[in-house]
Length: 130
Figure (tube, rainbow, N blue to C red):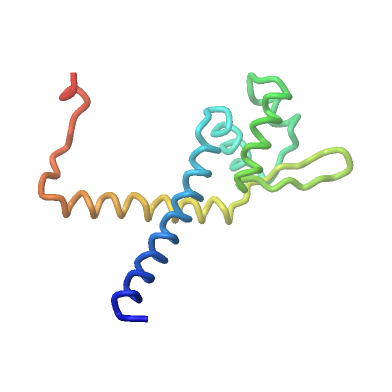
């Protein structure tokens, strides 16, 4: 493999890793992209665990709706379900949340550094487009 081929491969691998991290971060953002799911995460952050009924008692939502939101958070890896008999106790997957925080911080750091390097880094205001 020539030096040029090797550099292309390295760049592609870096891009593939970047894309994978972006996909993971996007999945977390999608899961957290609903006010009810944010409220559930905040509730679970304040306690070690809760079953669905306990979460329902603190939200103005039907049990079936809360169950659907819990499933979305679980599918994204943000919740761990500890099944005890017929009850499922939910707890935050703090490792996944820490990983998502790292990905998110890296994402914003890259945007900031790219913005600083841009020769026309003027801030565009919303009212500039009206």
